[in-house]
Every structure is written in structure tokens, then in C-alpha cells.
Length: 404
Length: 166
Image (cartoon, rainbow over all chains, first blue to last red; front, top):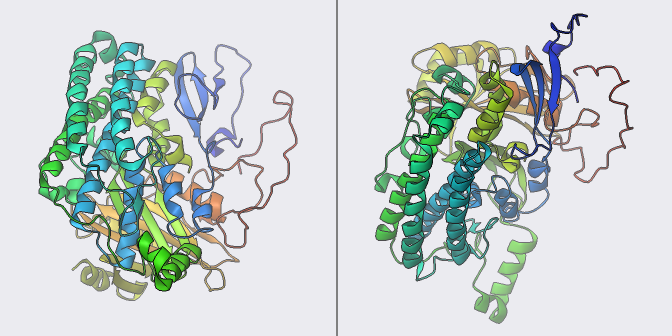
């Protein structure tokens, strides 16, 4: 492991009380989520410097995308931020649809919006639950995880899978929302309301929780912007920047919701912002379910979308169409584009370059929590070891997205 | 609108300037890049407060081989810009943007890790996602996805002196 350049020219003294202790909070640590190594320089319990080492979950996402066809990228995107995989699917689909110059039908866009918000709630519940559990509020953790189970049931009812869904396609989605979806959502939200109320009572004015989280891991507004932070981390500093309002996509501009913000940019603000965002996501889902029209959930352009199965099996043109799309891939016109959506952690961007063949030339993911990890050293310096747990927890680093 | 302002301000420094799929894209040469980025961040009509992403594309077979692509965003003015800097393959270096935006720290480290492009002026350029003994730069097009790496010999963590940073 290479150490930072700034540590190279150190002079070690012989006085043991002067010595700065180097400690590695290793990649496998019971209190940290995901494999991350912190190379710490400690003065007692105080962190003088912290070199964050990521990459333990690097699986070569960007390289592997270049090896298959465009549709084969979708399973890879699931495994980026695996706590909210619908959002990754939607982001990639929207980006490539800009290159294709197609727009999915309105029902599909509403469905994507609804499932993105469901995924966002699931991700926030995971983050909040884990953060609470790590500081000792295990009941809160179990309540949020149980609520998350109901959300996973919702996701499974629509996509067939709980976690990694591979639900979006270029020009549409794989499965429509089931007919009883509004009823399922109502049941789930009734339970979720109870959980949110309980967690609020347990945590928001809890002396221990406030002492652990307030004024810890502060990152002021200008630093947050300079480090490229977006999402709940930026909103916790008071900047009301949300891509769903600033650069609206899908039909977010037809729904009414607020952007919760914090004040100081400390861990408690991040917690509070994510907590209130769950309520806003619920509002978006409820409004979308009222507005969603009937209709197809996929475009029918034969260049980009697989033909229906009865055409494949009963006509030679259908068979050929299916064969070419599967074997050679969708011929996305040559060009490049960058598009970003509001992921659970911030701006999730995709920069895709196409050379006109059926395989992507370059797929780049702009991972929000990777940049947050870059700012972690700044957030932790001067704090104590125990603060690493809470700060790292509130960044919500998901290994799949950070390391790809 | 933004494109006109860019053309007016930078004129000849822009090797290319266009709107592609609804986004403004400019290409600047490696030598002009530091001044252009500084102007884009500091001048009030551009005010690009955030470096959203920085990556590279390997156009093997073309010269110059690499293109370092930066996505900029202005939070106050709510506009975006893509800036491309061509970098030759044999002399693969570019100026670091760490002095302008701190997000360049890790973004450039990853670009170096994956493509081998050196960012001059970066305070701490070393591999980030891959381990230090990794040989080669995997996102280059001449690196096959299924290449095996040599085994790294085991070292004694206590007796081995501290490794160099690069």
C-alpha cells in the first residue's frame, strides 16, 4: 500500500510521548460498512491525519461494460449502488436514450420515477438504520431494516428481484407495475409511517445520539462544493441543490416535494436530511400513482427494442430482429453524452461514448460516494476514532459505487 | 447562449466548441487548459463552482490518443459544460486541476490509475483503486480485460521498510 506523499519525509523522534501512532483501521472492520482501509495517524485518540484507501471492491465495471453489448451493461449497473439499484438502471437508461434520441412512453417514465423513489427510501433506511445501530441504537436499526423488507417486497413484486433488479431496458422497462401495486404501496407506507415515527422518537432528541452526531464530521459549504459533494451531504450544509429540481428529468417537475436541508454540515444534519427525504419520496410516489397514465411501457422501435415473442417465433423477420439485437447489440449511433440523475448519495452521472457498433466504447460512472470519500480526510481530522464510525456511516459509502 | 459567451471569451483557445445532445462541449489544448479552467471557475459569467467528473477516453489509433474529459457545473447559474483536453499517448500528462477544485484530487488519481496519465501539479498522485504492485493501466484499449497479473510476493510487514509513494 502506498502511503501519501506528504508522509514520506517524516522525522521520527525517540520520545514516545511525542510519537504519532500509525494505526490501520483495516479493510475488514466490524463497525465500518464496506471494505475501506483508514491509515490513521493518531495522537492518543485524536486523528491527526487519515489516508483513506478504497478499491477493495474494484471489479472493473468500466472495462467489463466495453466487452458486452449495451443491454448487457444493465446487470453491471445494478451492482453499483446495490442498496438502490433501480436508480442506477434508470440513470444508465436515460443516458443512452439521449444518445438514441428516444423517449420512453409516459407510463414507463412514471414507473421509473416510482421505483427510483422506492429504491431511494430503501437506501436511506439502510443508511439510517446502520448509523443508528453503530452508535448503539439497535432497536432503531431493526425497525428500519424491517421497513426495508417491505420495500424489498414492493421491488420484488415489480421486478422479480429484491436487490439487483436489472429492470430497465433501453427505451422502456422489462416489467410493468403489477395491477395491485397501489394497494401494496398503501400497506407498506402504513407500516413505514409507524417506523419513521418510532425512529424519530428514539433518535431525534436523544441526548446520546445528539452528542455522537452533532458537530462531528463537519464539512463547510465551500469545501463541500469544492470537493464535488452533492446529494444529502451537500444539502446538509444548507445548499438546496437537488437534481430533481435543478435539472428535472422523468416527471419530477409534475410532482410537488420539498428539499430538506441542514445548517452546519455535520453528521446530525446528514441524518436529519436523509430522514426527511424519506417523507418527501413517499409524497412523490403517492402523487405519481395518481398521475400515472395507462399505456405501453416500452417503445416499439425495432432497432432498439426486442420484438414480442409471438413475432419472434412465428415470423422470420421477428426472428432475425431478435437475433441481431441479441448477438450484435443495439446499434447506438456514434457520439457521446453525459447525463446525471439524483442518486441516493448525490449526483450519479453516466458519461457514455458510442462508436456506432453494438458495444459501448466507454462507459464512465460518476460515483457520488467516491468523491465523498475523497473529502473524508478533511471531515475526520481533529476528531476521535469513534467519530470515524459515525462520519463514515453518514457518508453512506456503498462499496459497489465507490470502487466499481 | 453559453456557447456564444465561451467563443467570445476564449476565441482561438477553443479547438472545438459545439452543442452535443443538448450540452455544451469545448475542446482546449493541453497548454491552454490551466488558464481556461481558471477562467471558467473564477469569472462571474461562467462561475463553474464544481468539477463534477474527470475521466479519460482512450482513442487508440488516433493521435492524440487520450482525451481527458471534465464535466463542470455551476451551482449558482445552473449550467453545465464538458471540457475535453487531448493528451498524446507517448507523452501522457496533463495539468492537474487540484488548485481549482478539490474534487480533482481523487478523480485524477483514478484517471492516473486506470489510464496512466500523469497529472502535473497533483499533490499526491498514486494509485487508488488498484493495488500498488499492479502492472499496467487497465482502461487502456491495449490492455485485455482478462489479463492475469503476476503474483505479489509476501512481505514481512515489520521488517520491510516503508514503500515509496509512487
